[in-house]
Image 1 (cartoon, rainbow, N blue to C red):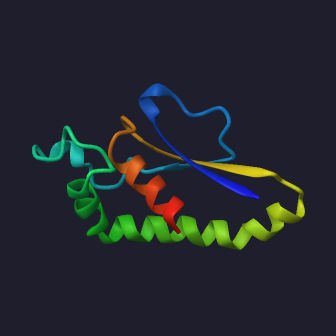
Image 2 (image 1 turned 120 degrees about the vertical axis):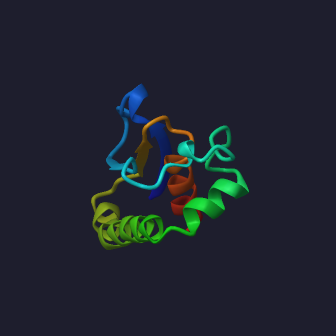
Length: 105
């Protein structure tokens, strides 16, 4: 079973191919930090900003827990892949960081 993690911006629409969609818009937004605004969730400064927030790490942990709980059932159902989409407002900071963090685990 292949897990596909994708990030997106709600202002651009929800991906049609997503099996699961998680909304990260409630997380602290680097867009409002002048030194982070033009960066992405792949930049070390944004990673440090989001990675240091308890609410962000809890959100990632809970998604990981959901995946690990239900993955065996999806595998038994002969699924070849599952697409997990993480969205924030623009798809630049929060969703990218969360999707990348999940993909690394």
